Image 1 (spheres, one colour):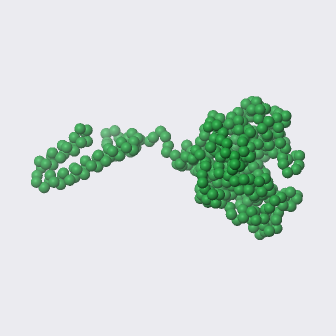
Image 2: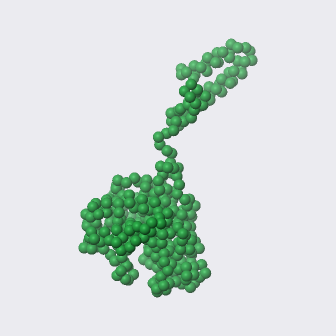
Image 3: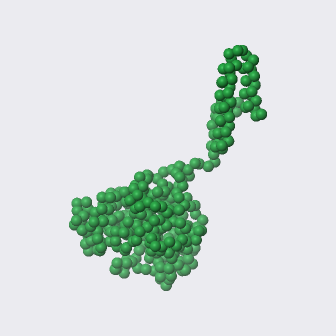
Amino acid sequence: MNPRTRRIADLLRECLTSGVAAPFLCCLSLSALAFAASCLTLHLTFFKFPPFQSLFSASHHLLYLPKPSNTTTPHHAPPPSNLWHEMSDEELLRKATTTTASCGGTAEERKKVAFMFLTRGRMPLAPLWQRFFHGHDSRLFSVYVHAPPEFTEEPPRGSVFFQRRIPSKPVQWGQLSMVDAERRLLANALLDPLNCRFVLLSDSCIPLFNFSTVYGYLAGSHLSFVHSFDDPRSAGRGRYNKRMWPTVSLAEWRKGSQWFAAHRELAVGIVSDRRYYLVFRENCRPLCYADEHYIPTLVSKLFPARNANRSVTWVNWSGGGAHPAAYRRRDVSEGLLRRMRDGSTSRCSYNEKVTSVCFLFARKFDASALEPLMLMAPALLGF
């Protein structure tokens, strides 16, 4: 018999010898007490409460509180390990729109950076990215991949890209379907409330710095990085459709790099937008290249004060034409990577200070560039 049960039995014997009416009342009271004590014992056993400590000094035992645990209960539920779902685009965007636009949580829940890859299938530079992420806390980043619907190949289980594909639809270069894919990536990433920064990358992108540098740069920035400018040429204003007026005027029409890094507030703004998206869907037809205009125009109109107005992805357009320069095995050199990294040809502002570190990523590198990149990465890129 445990001490609690023994004490109740002693009290019951005292009740039975104290008079005529009292035993009946005492029995009722003590029965209720015994039942409550049993329930408390069961509750503590079943739910495994942490050790208790006295609220007062050691000589008092009037009130007890749970002893603080060494682990903090997460403020948010962990994201799913498998990103696949059966939601339509409309359902997905609606759900993402209802998520919080702010980044919060407990002290242990640091900001996460969502790396969103827009791919054509297999990722030829995956080994380089695997090394980039290797050894770093998985609570600091998440990975999302938008591949063609017919591509169902999964990387090895140990890969950071394993089960990171999202439900997708076909994408055509220069069409609004490219914007749809970007919004699809953002919406899926927004379902994780701890994602605070959202970076759009391609399968031909490489990191120019190690993870710690990239993470610190993005998580520490006060602004989003979306390239947005007024291009008076035919490749800029010449793509404007007068039918967009008055929702978007020619003076408000913007152009910019497709590759962005956005704060959560901007990400929610992009997926929740219907007004400007519908105007682009109806009036930004072929030769308009919606992926170069939709987000730059939207950001310029709605979030100008929260934007650094530049991209953190290095691209070489010096050759002209509709596509940037591509780098193959023979093109990869220490000099090339240093020029991309050290900003020798440019300076930029980061949190109101001038810096030479303007680009965190670079493109376009094809599969043949992987071997020299892997050889140079430890000494030159820092991973």
